[in-house]
Image (tube, rainbow, N blue to C red):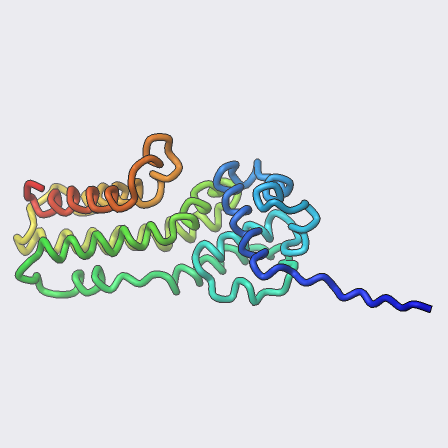
Length: 238
């Protein structure tokens, strides 16, 4: 008699990232509702059955994609296939990720400190910090944006609890420096903060998914928008 021993097939070590990348790409391109497991499998260059080895369905894939985009350190220690998340679980996981990722030391220090001798350098440092953060987490931000109708609790956590708070902190900083006479007065600090933040966001996040913006060089885009916005805030000619 011959005996054959069949070892269980091991998952390739890069396959979880491959699946998550494909899910992220598909959800951003198609939107959550229109995305299909077959499309995710096609982008990952695997069969649809392979996708189910890592996630039980589309909800689980979205949870994995969002966690990975916001650099959840526990994402691949989860049991596979990842089960469908319970009610509110994706929003809760996102909030934990945002709390871990929300490090803006230059903004926090500037908002609480007396004005420095070189306010222009301070403004430039704060803007660069915000731009760097947005660019780093642009895939996660885009995932939230594209799925807002299908995951309203996720959108609420991001926009109402996190993004809005960040804009207001930046607005408080601008208003304080205006009152101190260190930057030009504007009619409304919150409006000014929204204008600056949304300008940064377009270049750091949304540019990648627009026809013309995708052609712009990353370093050139960053330096140009930071230079122009810092000059506008400080009332100087760039």
